Length: 351
Ligand code: DP6
Image (cartoon, rainbow, N blue to C red; front, top):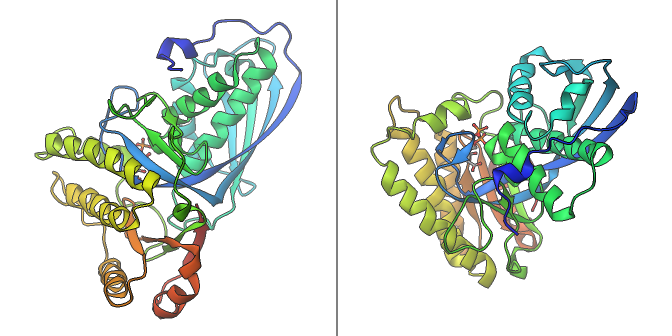
């Protein structure tokens, strides 16, 4: 079933508020195969994107809520990461709370203490905003279930993604496993710009136990904030052609995931990663986020594929780290020919 924006608005008032509540949730990170790059309106994507869910990289979040005597106009909250108060993260969360007010008005009835930690190393270069906002969205839906008359599971599943999207676009895809599609595509059933969906088809078993090994070429903060990056698409000389390409790529990717066409999956995944960086290199201002070692590793992966035929490929985020994607049964061989020769930390994750 398709949901519209107004379906997620809830005006019902909770009868009685519990004085204290503790809600826990966890959510995984994800890596895009076809990239979301460019947005408009209220966090709506310029094009559809498709991702693998990363099961090991989770955000674990706890919210401690205290009912207020009267609802407030701005949500009162404090955010703790790894048990330390983190005021730097609070403006983005405050922005999120503001954007979701119509869909979850009950959030202003409480004072919030939010504590989060990740199962992956901090400043590892793995985007924690996707898993972080998805976990927070799950907490808000849990609260909605406790306070307001119940709705269908489908409604709640889609609303989690809808809310997560308002925190960070890619967070929309961090709510279910193993593959999610976010963004309307006329030829892919049930897709929407408002929330991500699971594909209607079964993912081919060659993608079971797929691995994403992240080579940390560069740790730490992103050089270009994702919102600033997305804005570069507004006046990008290749905007229209990129849009067309991303629609085609998303449809092709669903076909390869369904049929298990590893050869074309590899070609397309790498083409998408390079397109993303090509877009960044040709925007105004432009960014070169790859480092010499990023290119070196890309070449190594291509050499290994050429010489040994191993089905391994790379993808990239908006940064220098290389995500190495491959079926688990070639892990040992890759350790020998690739990872043991790299002078960077590698984090292994599973789809
Ligand atoms: C390159 O989801 O981080 O990782 O919506 O501004 O929070 P905001 O952006 P964000 O952008 C992710 C961009 C990307 C590609 C992708 O994940 O699809």
